[in-house]
Image 1 (cartoon, helix red, strand yellow):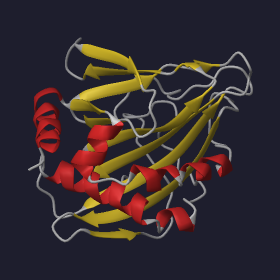
Image 2 (tube, one colour; image 1 turned 45 degrees about the horizontal axis):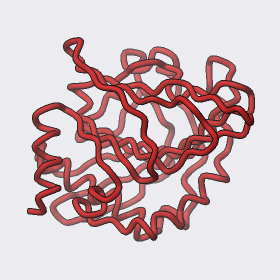
Image 3 (spheres, helix red, strand yellow; image 1 turned 30 degrees about the vertical axis):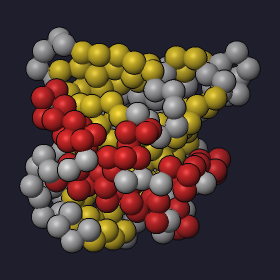
Image 4 (tube, rainbow, N blue to C red; image 1 turned 180 degrees about the horizontal axis):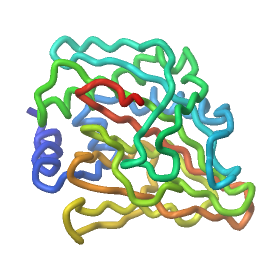
Amino acid sequence: MDPERSRLITQLKADGYVCVAPAVARAALQLDLTALDTLRETWERLPRDTFLRDAGQYRSRRHSCYVHRPATADLAAVPHRAHWQPTSYNALHGGLQRWFAPVEPPLSASPAWQQLLRSLGELFAELRSVERWYIEAHQFRIDTASGLGRPTPEGAHRDGVDFVALVLVGRRAVRGGETRVFDAQGARGVRFTMEEPWSMLLMDDARVIHETTPIQSDTGQGVRDTLVLTYRAQGFQEP
């Protein structure tokens, strides 16, 4: 096993989370970062999130779902479906069936995109043996056009899944956006700011809670683009 991959698994087991630099992600997950870079322009076309209950105008997103079988590396998109969470995990937006525009077909079909989803699923399967992962992929853009942008308006939270991968796609002309991870059963925590494209935070969702602080910009043109991938063994969350 690649030593970096072994280290990621060891730290996830020990701490419930691990921060992954782009170079480590490339080696441990066998990612083509150059190919992934060509996909970043799709974040320029994300529709506005019309479900924000704080009346904010700072978030755009797309959402698609997949099923992955780690043993065979099979990855398949499923028919477009709503995103739903219980209020126990998302007090602000829980209980809503939120229909977001799907990920653009060329992005979903991209080998680099599919390799990212598969590689993370295979890594997580080394920590928890599963027949299949039910994956939700969320493209997010948080902007500062209306002043303050809130990456996690629901506050510190869990997602109700097995594993979460928070991937920074890019940020420009912003300050803030500090990511915070805390032990779900105690006060221990860490805080850091993701700066490099394709840096990642991988989390065992049962063991930690997480949030990201608001962003601001002196120019009013700041953006923070992320990809959030959730992996759940027991099917998609539904009402």
